[in-house]
Image (cartoon, rainbow, N blue to C red; front, side, top):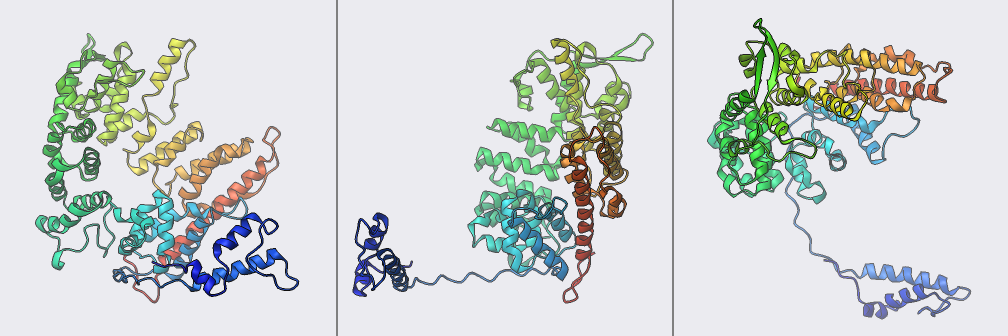
Length: 580
């Protein structure tokens, strides 16, 4: 390391000692005479500063050279095509705007920081590589925003790991893009195959993964497990099983959670064994994963328990009358081993808590068998006796989301014209009952189990019926860009809110979503909304001008997104064209 010159060295060169200069500066030249002689006409403070500057140069000149570090290995090659010139310039602007702390200029200017995630996704769809000169800025952006990391690391490619080894601030890159298939031509988290062998067999795949699985950091091991599972789920499970007994409880939990992505019936024996794990959290996660496999033995055990507590009462004419519920009176050891948590959260009754866990782990297809062949919509429409409807329907909702069952999700969602909550009646008991009844349905989660096109239509009809006040979470689960008629519904609702003189700030979240999610081809159609109409009599002061600026920003952002996409679709004449 570098060594500064000593005070003795300073005095030998007729330079005052640094400590003496520092003491005079701290005490002041009025109280302590500087260790220098001022030139004629020079004041003592000026002489002190001149001497300090001279001493600083002398001290720096006296640094002893440090031993040179070994040069790092060369950065790995990235065979993907380079970005087109216009797209390179665009990425530089997006990263520069991020470091500047957001968009500048008027409120109508697009927020470039919010466009960076979309730009990265588009670039990765085309299979481009990041410019070498922009890799540090790209990794800095990903370090500051975790939502950027998966796409940023794919674009950065193998050189992200190389740079992360040189700068500890970028160590997050060593986790890789776990859970995502590697881009074409890129080495995955596994690294190169041993001796250049193809990873075509399970044995070769495990040999390639073994070194990093045994010796890597935890984040690297998670990435390796995800990469192996993506290529060969059985090989990934074998990798995990080999070290399972020696892993820490918190690591076992994270590894187990990573099995969700490629979960299949082949994982059942391993998960069944994990039901006897020492960690309660590991046992609970294993039970949850098994309940997502309708054909598992755990799902069958849960169904057998549920059938004893939930039955169909038949009317005298032989038709279905109502659902009868008799909740369990105890949570025995077998239920607890299968993931039923015995102690309920505050405010929940034990029996209702146990019943909900049994129902949500029961395969939904069993209900049609038990209820005389009724479909999901007919079962959901049945009355439930003794006030058990909120608890039963809430458990069905969780089961529909966990099992990704579209028919049950559709039935539990109901018509989009229905309100999300029930207006409470008067009285404390009625208020509590109404709040419980209104809390069982989570439309955003249920929508996630539906096809993208159906999701967009449902949310569009919901907005048309209820406006935007309750639609923000629903919009967040819709595919981007928004399909029609969803885009039209959002814009029409914003236009109606403006004409009604509503506070525009109440809709800033939806407006931000629209900037990122509307189809850019709608920009010309929305141009008419940028004009500022007259203030309505009952409108908020200044709202009209704000609405006009908001629509100008919306149109400008849509046009910028269209330009960004065009830039990425134009191949670089000097490079290879991207893969289609």
